[in-house]
Length: 375
Image (cartoon, rainbow, N blue to C red):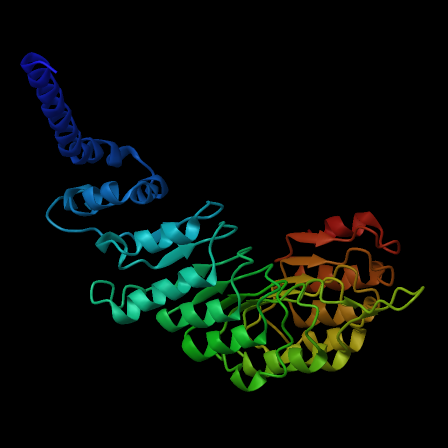
């Protein structure tokens, strides 16, 4: 190679180095402009592109300021619902000062979130000075549809989030009473719990079920819950304002028969122990009788009651509700053939000032024109 060719190669190499250096210097400047126009979820995603980009973004604080550069504005909500690679995104986000005071995390139907990611977070919170107590302010955690999370994952994350108030993890068959025990043990301030579709019975571990502050509970489709399990809930959670027991009947699978197990009146009568109850969904409660419904009528504050397909109920039970729950706003009697105009007359006398929705579809003994007098 001639001297001229060597000098040309050297110049080309220097130009390439200068170009790379220029690009590296330009990235923070470009990102400072672009980041103000990016949604939060996209901005966090950039942290995962490469180690260099992660370092560049994290080491340039103005990129993570909101409004004035004088101080950090802490982001209160992290929303990764329906996103892929959600576990890594969550870990990356909580490594930043901007997200250390987060109050709400939404991972509903997020992909790639597993117990191992929650373990990483717990270790960061408990053993890393930089992330110490970064989840202490978390109040809301939505893990709905995250089917790779197990009881171990619940134990792990609740240890790091003692201030949790709202917890939801419906549609997860890996979660059992063991997970509930960890939740209650680690989080003493739960007021809203949704574990619909999980494998719970609430009896074997009822000693841990001391959530006296719980106000809203959804355990619909938790078909393993027994009479004794429901009784434990009603005894321990006297502050409940909302209780969703939708679709808790269980198909027993007997040959050539269609037999379903449901709660008995013994359990339903104990709903009367909830003086603050305003919302109650008993859809499909096939064993609920008029006597059980008469006990539920003692819940004077009840505003919404779903009795869809409660096939044993008759006028007598509905009249008891009308006379006891005079603030009723919503009532569904869908599919109940044992009710007639007689119970509607009682509803008209007692609830006409508050009732806004009345469903009598499938109630063959009811004349439609009576409904207009109530509403």
